Image (cartoon, rainbow over all chains, first blue to last red; front, top):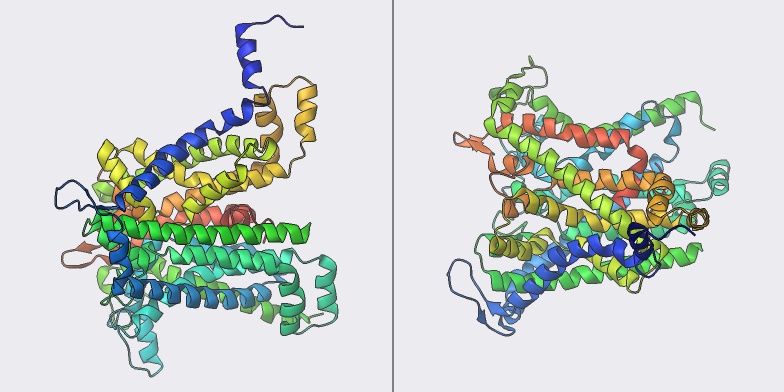
Length: 306
Length: 276
């Protein structure tokens, strides 16, 4: 037996199976408590108060008033349903397009310069969203924009895509699709990678049509991965903020105002903290529901693959 | 089997798809070599004599180098801290499964699922209250906190894949836990570490809202500079924006190119493995 040194004793104490697991968690828990638990409790508390940063008055307890105000605010409901439309149509288009392009890239191993081509395809995902938002304004510009120039070149009349309330929502959606379709391509390629090699070869030999490949091979084996991809996109799309901030900031009027922008305006322009906290609590509940669904699918997949 | 001609046509289509997605970015890069008049020319010009003036002016801006430094400093330090502490936690979650592991993993994930303006609201109030607004420590630690959830998820998945026999062998041979964690486990989960590093790096590098709200003059990063420096002399300063965006795009694109194998793991925080 080695001699007991104080340092050795400490090390042995810290290494015990009862102490070590907790010890390893301390840093993350510290982060979690300071930057998440405390702020969340703060948020929860404030949601029951009337509190405006501009009034300079102390918060006044208001019970459920903020929540009542939000539920009775038709503007918020409109923004929420607009967000829903944005999520459903955006993620829907990205999924279909991403799956088709993913299938197209299925046998691309011999593509010359494949790595460069994929980097170019994935680049929209890693471009700073405020920069994409800003620059698409120039692309869409009615006078100077390259898109209108091309449309005019083939005989159409130009349009003020972002300035016209009938086209602004679709124009923003197009940019979101451009940014995130590559993600669904990535997920489709991952789903394809999970298909047993023998079946891929069989599909190739049997000369399956695209629809057959989609249904029999990709959807059968890759459905969980695709579902995870769709869920991740849904959650991310629900959060969309930076992109719109510089592109339209919710305008014209409120035609592109998603709920993250609504909250931003009420919290950091109007400084109505009580009301905003209550809306943030509602969004938190929605996010928790999304997360629970995500984890449910994750376990489901693990069980199915086990 | 395809004929060589079909193969060429197929490859041409794939390149066309990649180029279509890249076209708006190519347009930004092209614009950064144009004069202000050329950027706003109608019809848009494709052929022109490229100028480096925009870059010269960009790097001559006092604030730009400072903001570029901030972007780099904030993202690198936050991500390093986050991955280090996440690795320890992931090891604990994976090996000892302390009570409440599933619940904690769930809570960690749900932080990242919240819209940014809702997540930052209480932190903003807290930072104003404590006087942490616009401090490097405040920014780095917040970004680290935000990078922890995905890092823990990615790393736990990878550590789960390393057989506990490695730990047992180490224990039997008298290695300390620290030694086992750093010498036996860490080398085997390096792909996960890299995925966590690059994914969170890209996130913090591109992050705008949090920096805008809890940062300030001292700590603002390039996305904030871009958003607040849009206008000069009455109009949008497109030369500034295009040059800035082009410079800023280089690191993430390089990361995607060099670490393409890790992109999928990072983008799905370890819930989906594989390479493209």
